[in-house]
Image 1 (cartoon, rainbow, N blue to C red):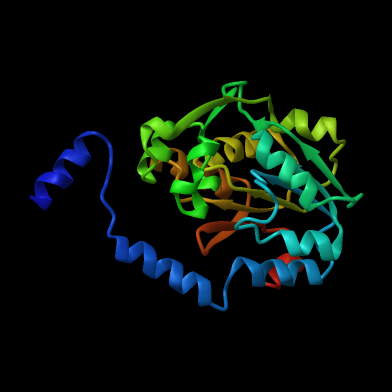
Image 2: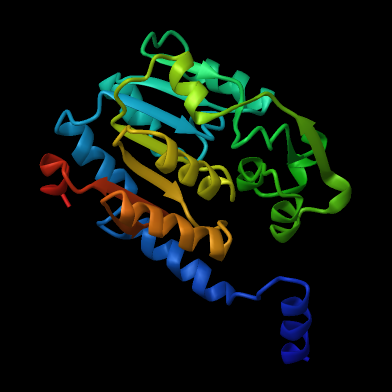
Length: 249
């Protein structure tokens, strides 16, 4: 029966993953010395981060390792969040911080994103707290997380390209680019690497990027002289030429 179920899932494009593997990986990440939080602490403490762009900022607190560093070190920051409810909470959570600007848009490549799928606010109480953070352009992403199809709502959003974002906020230097957009991370980063001369540290969630796009992204990172490694559920990327950053690895 299990073999049959795996075969059926494979035919329709899904792959069953051992839940123990996922849970064990998260336990290791939670208690490992090598964590995103420790890494951010190192690079911020060395005064290497003066300008930040965070794409998929959510509410600025939920599962957000950047929050305490943005408050403590006050770098110039652009926080990008397309969902109105999250965006309003984001502004409240960083209230009165003059170093932070807010963009209520989705970052889109070639204007292909103008809506997102989310869990209906009235149904959120039926799910774990992490469900608020899985809004995606891909409806299947929510279904794979166990969300009922009848609880999914389509919300139209503003969109902007990364290039236009940098022009809008006059971003001429960028030290840290952090992305968590539930599967669209690869599209944004490939576009960024092909069309921008900025050389930030890049941290992005890789779990939900499709294999062919992820392979393309890795090849682009290599061709652009980035070194990279996995921490937690993210890939962290450093420009090779930045000696100060590389000395911390």
